[in-house]
Image (cartoon, rainbow over all chains, first blue to last red; front, side, top):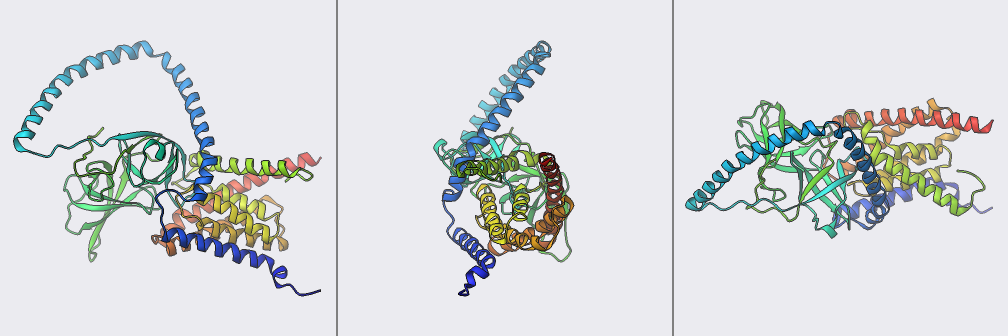
Length: 283
Length: 169
């Protein structure tokens, strides 16, 4: 019988083949990053996304049924409380309207450039990253709904991440806790600038802070707007620890994200790339 | 897989199993995460199928499931494909010399597979993307992931083996 080395070492041959194929795929992707998701990802998501969306819709339906039943029992009392709250807010609105008019007059006098709120698109989270090595979420809007790559994603509490892949009706959002994510940031109190990067754990790290920068536990960290991805002023998190080494060039701080990234269900995505005129208006 | 099934039925069964793995991993497993680390069902099934097949099938199953996990993640395709194909092939190779048909051994093998795939993934990521700290990655990600996956695997193998034994009676 003729000696066939492939047959004899078929296990090793197949292993070498698949390892080489993986290496080539990786090299290609890292070298040629694409505007939209690659074909295999597009195919897989086209098949999987409808199931994820269906599960999300049905769980939202049952959840709303249950909360509807539970809420009915306290409707009357809640209605009375809400009516009082509405009356109070109406009175407050009158004062705020007056303050706004005065603010506009003063802006005109000082000829300050007007800040506009960024136009946004709302989306629901339909899945989370299956891998522990990356942190991302899947949302139910894609380029058909006007989502663009590298736009900021946030919710009323603060920054969630940025759009990293866009498909037809779904998009992937890289969270701020992803180790490959970096966001330009500044400390609200001292106005010191740095970069917030994701970590392996549940925190982020604020890096490249000058050694003499004043920073303490409890300081709020906001987006600086310098990276061009997100408007200035979006809350990122709160400093939970400061790490200062004697002979180091920079000091670092641990930042606890303001948004509970595990349980976020709805997000807002900027409809167009950030510009200097945009400023986040807050909760 | 059930013998004597038509090829179409087998394909449908494979599709349903893959879909179940995907849905469970993306929707359910995050609720079982501890310290942001959840069990990896893809790795669990690579080990399950590789222990029941030769190294050729193990490598291909590992590549396929790794490719699928990479496609659903923001990871470049090939990261988990590389590590899982290595794990699948090794398990297909070592199964001949081991008494692996008991849930505890399978759990231990799953733990070792988790460590190996984690180290390979870390090396690949450090080579192709932004380098990650070795110590942090080992103690806060690789070890916990391997332990959780092994525990889930032990549970899964135990329940599945009991079900098979009852079915055989």
